[in-house]
Structures are given as structure tokens and as C-alpha cells.
View 1 (cartoon, rainbow, N blue to C red):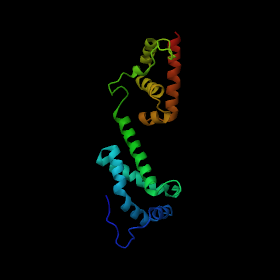
View 2: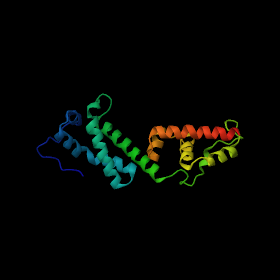
View 3: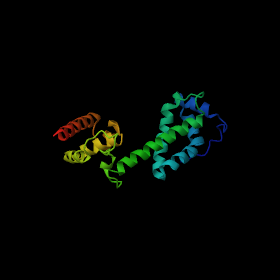
View 4: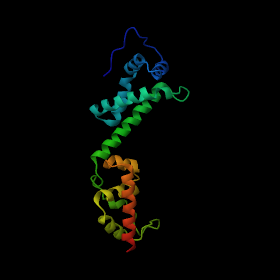
Length: 189
């Protein structure tokens, strides 16, 4: 996707100047910035996502982020390439995380989702009876149970759960609240 440099444009134009021009919505400067940095940024992304097609998609997101965020670039905080590599790295990591979440359902990785529940004989454990908890969790609807396990055993946020399930954050809050209430009721009986 790399374009040959325009012979009429200065090759040694500082990246700081290009970013400042991009911040002013200069499309020509944006094209020159792309031509000068896309190969390096693509390499950064490809090393993380390990899939050429996905890396190309992420690179588009990276340059969209650069276009939108150029006005926030501060030369005193980072060199231009460092700033852009940080954007590329973060977008690539996000893409890998999303792909992993889409590909793996809870428990698909071969691990027992109940294994993350603390052992009741451990002094630090807060649960009185692991078997009772397992039985109570089994009574919950599968999606609700997976949300509770991901939230409280894996540390997923409500926003991550919403993205995972395709539901809105308020629905996730309700599921978690009702699921925990059902667990409390089940455990107390």
C-alpha cells in the first residue's frame, strides 16, 4: 500500500511539520506522511497481529487515528515516529484482543471455568463451599453464567462483556445484578 514519494515534495520534510499540517487537515501532507511512515507502521502492526489482511485493516485504523489525533501530538512528549508507533501498537493489540474474544467462548480454551473459583479450604478464600457455588452457577442461564464468570473471575469490564455478547451495557449490569442475587439466594438456602 506504500506509494512512491512525489519527486516534487521534499524527502527530508520533518515528520513534526507533516503532523502539524495534518492537524490543519492538509490532505497532501497526510499523503506524504503515509508514504513516509506506512511501511514501518505496517511492520509494527504485522508483528503483533501476524495476519497480513488483518494488519492492512489495522493500518487503515492507525492512519485514521493519526488523522483525527494529529492536533494532540506534542513534540515535547514524544518523537513523531514514537507517537505513531504507539498508536499502531495499541490498535494492533486491540485488534488481537477483539479477535481472541470473538474466537474463544468461555471454556473453549480447554480450561474449566470453575477452576478460577477460589478453593474453600484456602485461608484467603471468601466462599464457604465451592461445590455449592458450582451447583448454584449451573442453575443460571448459560450466557448470564458466562458473564458472571468473566466479570468476577477474569476481570472483564461491563463494556467488554457488552461487546462480547452484542448486548448493551445496561443489559449486562442487569444480568450481573440478577445473577449475583440468584447466587446469594441459592447459597443461603
